[in-house]
Length: 381
Image (tube, rainbow, N blue to C red; front, side, top):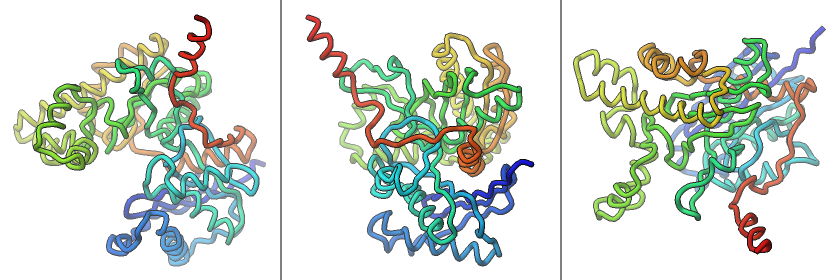
């Protein structure tokens, strides 16, 4: 008889923490635990929230009558790490402790999900069980040619919805009786952020960087911009650095054009005859399609399937338009919504069941630059 694995998933956000309890693939409990905004402001740094968030989660567990006794594992979302291979990383007394430390201090970036591993470890200290981290946004598996830009000191780096992208790849492969590690896929996460990615045999070899402002525009992100026009904006004297940073990463994209990032509101505007709203939404779809076409080129046209995921993939108009642009490349599957909590639990189960081998986090970025190649050339000369 198949063993039933009990996994508690933890996904910290800006003002809330999603938690869910799984028994194998079945989600038996889930809630989004909200944290009072005024209370969060009293903490000087994100890491100072650890005790407060952990206690709030434990209180929610008690209030909902959920028992974590006998839990096999805690699986946490995290970030702020050095660039790393995709996979599942177990934190125990001997391995990956540097991962927990890097996340906690925000080695590469500061975000509440940095607290995920420490919250999981705190709960494991109480209830027992193993602790896992699954495919953080720091996953970087890009082909070297993907990294090169027209300036020698500027490189493209990965920054994507790796957790949801890879989970969708795994789900799709199983649905067609295939193996994610043996397929070539284009996976588009279309939500508050937009990740358009090429997956070759289980690795994300091409993807726009949602953190650094690359690729299609998104509901609140500007995406790629003409470099000289952006440079002129920077030196126009109209904006401070922070104002432009916020406009590019927080209030750009659909919100900058239309005053709202809510797609349902935009669709109502279009239904009401707003031609500019339709133009902007069509451009949003067009940019996603062009990025997906680039992924097809990165895979040399050998594409087994295209997956549309994320919350906005629920919009039939967007899906139909993308099918019109892309269906000549490969069959298109719609897996709308996000599966982050499911992905956390599934990753832990794959390692516990022996289906997948856990990875070791070194803290050394998988990519820095190509100076070693220049050094090799100099030696050769």
